[in-house]
Length: 130
Ligand SMILES: [Zn+2]
Image (cartoon, rainbow, N blue to C red; front, side):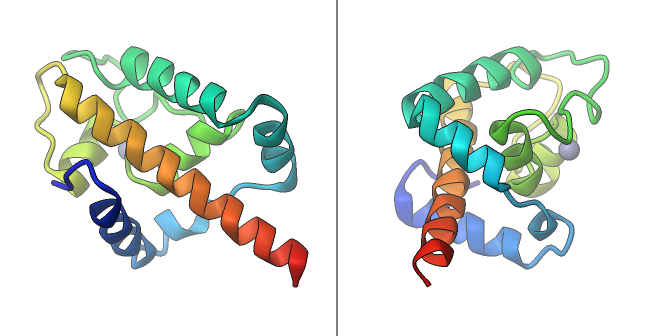
């Protein structure tokens, strides 16, 4: 599992790039406009809310289906970073199922989501300046 530092997140993001499915998720103009409007701090607090409510509990009756495919940049980021459900968290990041997520694990998941969103924003800014 990736540790909670920037270098390791870069490794995680590179690993995800090798997956055609994960790499098919990208933010759109309306997402960038939304992020710009509310700010990254708000996005981070939403990410904590979603992860705490939908991923952290030991038992999730609809695991695999709890993350919508649209509606919030964090949802898109979760699919892109394989943090959409406990099944994917185990398969990709070796975070065990059938237990509550630890504070460290929650921090890792939120951190990875935010790094992916930041990398999308960089991609968007570069395309604007090109
Ligand atoms: Zn999943």
